[in-house]
Length: 319
Image 1 (cartoon, rainbow, N blue to C red):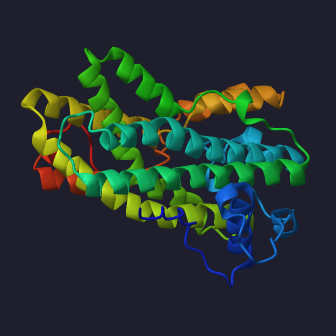
Image 2 (cartoon, rainbow, N blue to C red):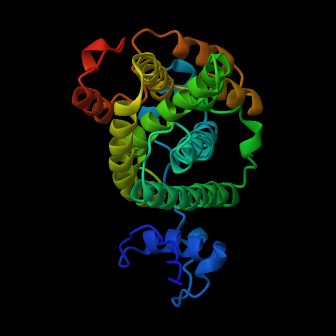
């Protein structure tokens, strides 16, 4: 019997103390990796209280008079909440959008006849996603400890992409259409999540623990995007014309949700902070027609659709 290979941790630079700390924290929390020999660096000791937890330019209200007139502590708390929400968004998408889609592929729920090679690749990716969830959970936990603010994940609503996916699957006509919708949302998330992670990974203003967490996660996702792209092409070739149309509509729905600022989450945050004028600030940002989408790079999905010969058939305005 061939021994099972222990799932590998994300690739990282051993010379980078922050990346080493993030990966070592994973090793401690994951029982199978208790044999790691190096002394575990402490994430808390690497936390830089002087650094921002989240970049101002990603806040949808960064140029609003109410935000500009706040005390520095209020702005810091909003940025910390933004980082907690960022991590929750990643974790919810990994757990409830990506893994269910991969699970469909792993069990050939769409009757595509995918063989062992794809099944193994998908299961490996699903293991990776558990590591990613733990990485972002650790990053939020150290932020709460170091800032001294509770900021619980469960105080925030389900993330926008998940809410939209659940609504779309609920509206699907039958179990097969629900499965295709789930698969479409997974495809968009896995091919495009690097664009979301890139918003944080190379911003030097940001907390080094945060940047390292995102950078490590992103390295795996470039591989996952290739897997999801290959699988989507194989699955699409097996679908009926009606199922193909449903899949393409699902891609558009998923891109629309994935690209948008989640104003429901922001309304919740300013309410939790009891921030005077906060609700009006979020309303103004939500209805500001000059406001661009949070994620704008869907070049991976565009490339997939061009390869399938359907990019021109989709009701989506490609950038």
